[in-house]
Length: 467
Image (cartoon, rainbow, N blue to C red):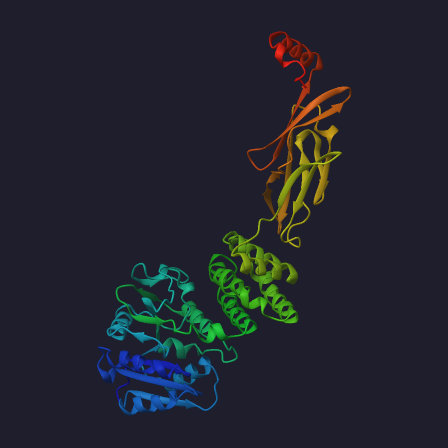
């Protein structure tokens, strides 16, 4: 018997309501039916998916084969079982709640035959609000050098693989990973492929977001997702020496998969579980976070990685809680200035004191550091007799210097001060860069008396009103 051109592999678990659309998209393929083999694996379904698959297979004999696993083992075990039955020159992995464009398999296999590519990636379209990165499919490129063309951001198995590549290197999905078992398989295939093609000329794959937004990733434990992330990093470490290629791959794992574990679901864990997750993630960060990856981080990513690297569970918890409750990061330091009996009081508040040490208050360049504390009183004598004194704060937010703006209190108005037998008027004003400027002007009483006498002479009616 002539082997089929392509084997489509589909793991199935409790997706009965989606199987008709999945089946219809396969029956609509423009390939000659003899060129197609479909292997569906019922992975311990409890919703009648197994019976529905049996009905569909009876209506499509010779093409659709159904394997039944009595106990659920996860998509990795299901895909591996199907790979053992695959006879096609190529294999394609299609999830049971997704579907293909009618010409998808014909176009993908034709491209692989023409170019000799070991992996062919066709354009993916999100359905029902499912987000798909547009970067990978901006243009067709029949000879992509991994990790180029944003391939590292496309590690789902919804691709065409040359089966000879899979069998020659013994590529299989790691069955010990409850989630993310697909990324080590795809990543190793990318590294080993002699050629990779990306096709942006047709809508090949329709990726569905279920109405209840449920899938194996969103339902999985954070610790299991971390294990899957670590498995991907291990593949990158095995195939790429330290440098740009490894950084390009690990950048995706560290800044996306790992950092995204620390969101709302992290707060739902018990304290002991949170500490364990931080410890395990911290080991990954300390081993694989490079300067090149750190340079790409935005501020939330940088702060979370800082906490993970240092094992700061409480600080990370406070950071994530603030982010979830307020929709963003707090101001590292807020400061107010007011008069006290002895001088100018600068009071600071730190939303995340575990990540922001007590700021340093500086008074002009000539005086220098005044104090390192949340409340500092600058004696009045320090503000005189210079014409202008500048008060500024220096703060550190998880190791990075950040500006801190000093806001004058509503009662911070002009003030008269005696020093060395002279009287001065102090006028506080906000500076252009968040600092506070205090202007000092010496008051000449001889000039004041002269002006008042002149005023009395010119305006006699003002007698008794002068101050």
